[in-house]
Image 1 (cartoon, one colour):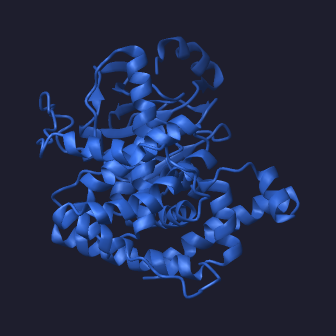
Image 2: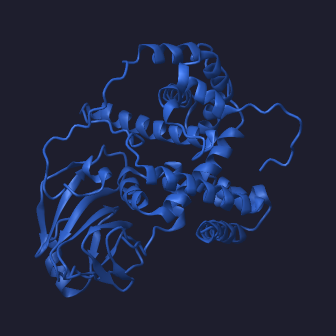
Image 3: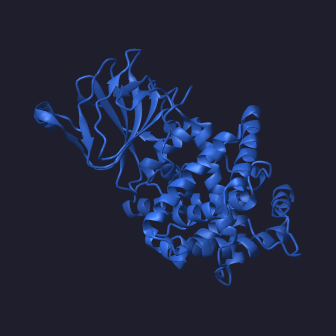
Length: 191
Length: 216
């Protein structure tokens, strides 16, 4: 996805998560924290959180990275995507908690990710899914992945995307729609 | 389970990025859990979001953030067993998807002849409500349009309307331009999980006469 493939040292984040899971390796975790925590915070701010909330959610995301390290399976998810899903769920939980505290009512907190008992065929289908998803994203054009990211992930208004890409508003709308359909088609094709 | 009706892609993308409100997230989540095709779409958006996160401009964490995180890790209860609190086994809910079973579900109330609903108690962070809607075989729901969005996932039984046949796992998306007149299949009661924003607007004389009695 990144055009520049310089000789930059490649850190194997998945290996670091494996070390956290296997033996609570604090050095490995420190390296993960140094790289990901500021990016989680930056990403959350870019997508609408204020700085205090982003700091708190980034911290609780890193706590969850530690506690869930054993659930990470490099054959089914990329490290960044896995950390994204944790941050996303932490943000949802934080919003829920804020409301609950406002009402002083107690409810059972549900961990939507907890699925400790995956059957073997489910694991197989997860690996297959991951392969198909990776192949589809690979075949998506840069232009298409860019509009999906700007529109849905960074939640920029269409008018702003039009300005960023230097396109008329109507073109942006149809490009977003086309990109989504294309992603669907690529995923459906890969059977 | 053959699923032939899916959520629109933008709804799946909003599900993946965590921007749906609670009721909508639940209904889309139940469909996604049972639909490999939509699950892969959600995974794809998560991958793109992961790349966005990895390339986000870093913002410095607080000076003591790492120590604070390590302190939280060190004082967390060791292997606290995650007990899923199943209050009482409700026969109607016994064979429903996990995500629905984990919800707090309120008492049944009658909506119209042959139709009843049970509200799902959410934390209330959004504008939409979620409920289980049960319709008896052959029931014909009132002709209506929506003043908001309606997201439906069929759990048991089936219904049909202009858009086609909807069986277990199928997802129906109604916005304010859709005119619905669903008819429940005669194989048994139809149980749907519904998220709704706004109110139903009844059409025609019958609708106007009956709507004071229809409480959704």
